[in-house]
Structure formats: structure tokens, C-alpha cells
Image 1 (cartoon, rainbow, N blue to C red):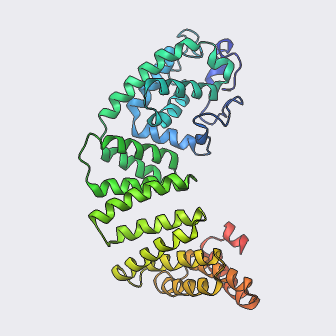
Image 2 (tube, rainbow, N blue to C red):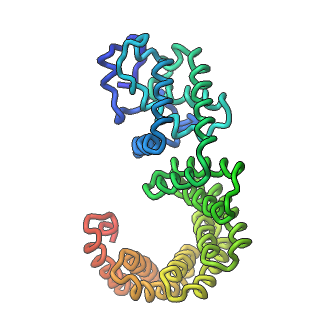
Image 3 (cartoon, rainbow, N blue to C red):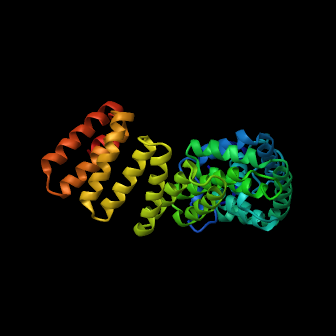
Amino acid sequence: TRNMSNKADTSHDDASTRTDDDEPSSSWTESSKINWLRLPYEKLMRQEVRQHTPELFDAVSKILFEQDIVAITLGGEDDNTDEYDLEAGTILINLPECESKEQAQDLIFNVFVRWFGMSAATEFIDRYDKVAALIWELWKEHESQVDFQTNFERGCSCHKKGLMPLAFRYYQSALKQQENEHVPPMDMAMCYDNIGMALCDLGNLESGLEYYEQALVIKKREVPDSLDVANTHNNIGTALKNLAKWDKSMPHFKRALDIRQRKEPDSLLVAESYNNIGLLLLVQGKMNEALDFLQKCLVIQQRKAPKSMEVAETYTNMASILSKQGDVAGAVKYCQLALQIQKRKSPDSQAVANT
């Protein structure tokens, strides 16, 4: 396995048994700079990086193999030239965060501590400087050849697959590229919006909010009073609601609703705004007002997306309000309606169990 206290003494056969499903070393600590990538889908992110940049991936892996920081190849006798693919993938996932060769060296060291443990990672400590210099030079050359649109599209691809940390890094790389390119303002706004979504999905609401606000400034200037503006108001309202800043959240939800009602009346976007306002009123304890907005939401949903999971969710929320108001019969009725949809759409889901 990769958790070896004395990697230099490990046999070729033992080293070759390592796979992409191996667990990190137990000496890896939560204080590490890249601890937030200890996620179930890190393997998928490594695969995604390799798919997007196969030549760069192979080149980094080759550098690690040739320099052999933890003596895994026993002086070049190992024929497994892909031996360091795990480390190469983890390094490339995180490299966009680095601003210098020194930061890249810190990253590489942390990656090797993660996978091999402190003892093996520090046995040949003098090798990191050269490795970092080679990888950093390779990375800078690569980044100089990739434009804003390529990084943005890669970010969107990861975003759709739910690989938010990697999506965030591609979006960051896109932002760096715009310093050397003329990027259309609305493309920049979209990038800011997507970074905001990625950060909020990762639980970093405050930072996500900052990017949403940058997107809103551009949209208000370029496409004032548009659905694009409404969507960003909606995103800001959601982030503020999740931060329990309810008084600041409501104006953004209402602004989104106002634009959507004028630009796309009786649409699911309007239903979404009704729902968001209703749920915000619910957490504020304003039960009757919340129920009114959820009923408005339900009317549109039943017309535009009948028997959808969104309708089931609205039924559930209305049932919650009625239960708190003491209307048990009404609450049970809406729970039963929700359950009918949930059993049909997703019979083995947590939603069915909860209802």
C-alpha cells in the first residue's frame, strides 16, 4: 500500500500493487493545505484532469518517476513508469492555487506526505527543489497556451459532473487568463457567477457571495433589468438566506421576482421565486405569508411541471407549515400527495423515507 514508513526498502512487487483506490497515509492531517480535496470523488477529479490535459499529466508523472522523491523505483530499475500517476493527478488538481515555484514545492511536499507518510516523504528532502522547479516551469508553459474559454469550458464540464473543487480551479485559471485577453464582459460575469455557485456548494458562502456580487455589477451595466440580472439576484438571496442574513436576503428575492414576472410571467422561474420567498418567510416564522407564496408557487408548478419532484417538495413544505399551525389533517393530506409523486419518481429515495 501507499502508507509505508520506509519506502526505500519496499520491494518492486509491493510498490506495483498500489492502485487509484488506495487510502492516503494516516499521517495526513486536516491542517494540510489541500485537505479539502479529501473527498469521495477525488479519483474522478484525477481522471478528469488526465482527460483534459493528457500530455501535461504524463509529463508531470514522468518528472516524478525520474526524480523518484521516495525511491520507489529503486534507482531506475522499476519499469512501471506510471508509478506516480496518483501524485501527479493530486498535484495537478491543486496547482492552479499556486502563485510561485515555492508554493508548488510546498504543495508537492504535502502531496507526498499525504500518500506516503512523513517518514518516507522526508527521507530525500533535497529532491523537492528540483522537482518543483521542473513541474512549475512545465505548468507555466502549459498555462500560457490555454485561453480563457478553454479553462471556462473545462470548469463547466466539471461543474455539471458535481466536481466542484476542480471546477473552481478551472474557473480560477480562466480568470487569470483574462488578464492577457479581451474577454467579453458577460463571459466574465458568467465565470464569476459559476465560481460563486461552486464556492457555495463547497460551503464557502461568504466567498461565493463576493463573486455573485461581482457578476451582478457587470450584468447591471451590460444587460440591466434582464433575466440574467434576476438570476444573480436569486443566487445572492439564496447565499444570504443560508448565512441567516434574512433581512438582506429578501430584497434580492423580491427583485428577482419582479424582473421574472415582467420578463417571463407564469413561468417556472416565477415559481422558483415564489418558493424562495415562501421558504424565507417560513424560517422567519411568518407562517401565513409563507403559505400564501408556496400556494402561488404550486399553482404554476402544477400547470408547468405536474407530478414533478418539485411539486412534491412544495407539498412537503406546505405540510410542514400546516403541521406547525395545528392543521394535522391538512398536513397529512399534503404529505400523502407528496408521497404519491416521490414513490413514482424515486421509490427508494431518502425523500420517500422522510415523508
